[in-house]
Length: 499
Ligand code: NAD
Image 1 (cartoon, helix red, strand yellow):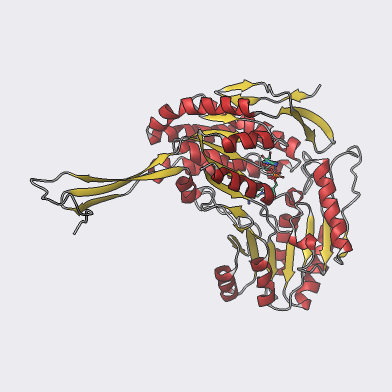
Image 2: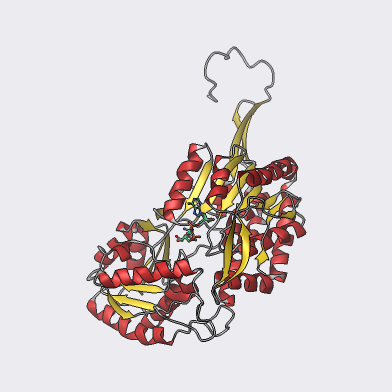
């Protein structure tokens, strides 16, 4: 008997009623381990109604009381870290240590949200004119929603609901149907932390639920993270319905290796950043750009034996460097890209296809794969693969190397490896990418800074978390008040100035 997953509406687990469900796999074995309901518009409406009812009281609560819920939630996350990480590993396929990182990075956004009394303060100008003061306040939007991808089922929901709810909004989370259990568990723990019923609701589903959220007139803002075509669709549809939308999307991040780089560090960093979590990270580093033939030859010579030593194992194997990919369909997609790159003329130095693990023959495993001599015109380079595949694109000069990420359709993250401060500084200033690492392979900004890419990696005016997150989840109101002494004169027919 497979487990049946529920929704979480108004503080309670609620069974799906649409009649449609989706399989949740154990990627280690390939077996179906649960069924998740796929919500219809009526179920979304129920969740929105619960959130709408909860909004006035939650928004009126003073900010330090909202912060206290966040503090307690953070404690509960720490207490339940092992449980959450194991649950996450069994649905996603990332190894348990990496799952802990997923929960930890989300928890750091909750820590940021604990500062909401300070973060949500407005501004004040005393004496903007005679007897006139001006002040602004940041007010919550109302019912808001988050739609999240499979690859960070703890961190990305917390990027969104952590900040949105701390600001006084109430929330509908629509997690990925591929690994819905951790988001549901987060909602239960959030209630346990003292959040009133209806403040955080989880609706499981697919396009039907997403469309219902986008069209719902009571949903005021939508944050989305996922693949680019769907992100673009969500952005266009949500804004068409007059909502505030931010839609973070796909990626193809480059790591540029200058001749003066510390090659020991570079090899270590690429192993983790290209193959960790089976390459299923939007900040993974799937393209290496060594500058100069000598750098490229050394990089290849040094990384090949290290790649051969990587251990692919089940997600609960403590010695495994990475586990299976999320579904059989995703495995087939990645393997198609490997074939495509080989057909396009990429030099396949290590082929990870056909990997099977004894006792787990039906698991969704792909061995680490390495291509040399990939070129910018290849489709397999231009598109996101999202698997354990590293493509090496050789460049003769730093200028030529730097053009690659700048001219690529995606602009999420980029890294440069060098000992030259000057080269790194110039590169960081000029590259057309949203997040830059200097000798840092996965430059995911800390929670009190802000996360977001450029070009087809984000359809958004504001980023995730940090002060930009507070701006996204609030609207500003500016009050001009006059408490004059005596007669203000006959100025009623001209535009007021503070002369
Ligand atoms: P996805 O686009 O398939 O799914 C994302 C969400 O959209 C899910 O909740 C899903 O149910 C929903 N969805 C699926 N099909 C839909 C449709 N036709 N209409 C409306 N909604 C739909 O993405 P995924 O495979 O879960 O996640 C991987 C992708 O996410 C990669 O492209 C990765 O780069 C990207 N990602 C980006 C960031 C970032 O911040 N830029 C972070 C993590 C992941």
